View 1 (cartoon, rainbow, N blue to C red):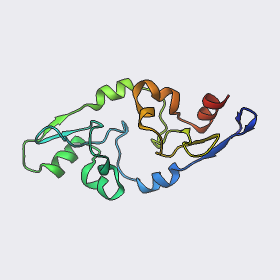
View 2: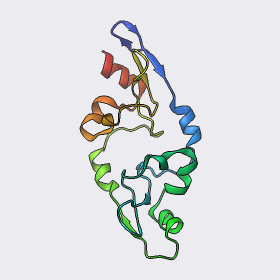
View 3: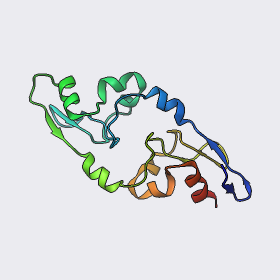
View 4: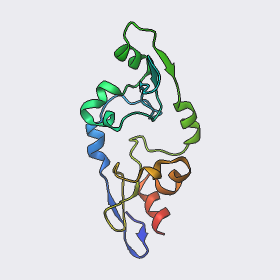
Length: 148
């Protein structure tokens, strides 16, 4: 990285390459995947409220879907499936520059003076008002914002 950390060389660790390969599947452009609603009967939603285990590689294809139709057909075939689009509000709140990979850059929580795009960071950094201070579209933006 050409940017400098307070006079020190900027370190950049791209960990998303491996994650992109592992998760090469049909994810909606919004980033809001559809799943059965954990609180409402016979309902598919694209809220962020679902068990973390559903994000695990071997479980994703069974629980997370690119469209509401795919969720309803897979989880509730032949039943009257309700659809609740909660991502509309999230898209409006989070209208910002997110990289196409979905892997945002942030301070590395384990390595000193380093920006990375791993998924390993405090959940609080993902909260609406904190995102712009902790998550960035590029490594350069992370370095410049956090260390200059």
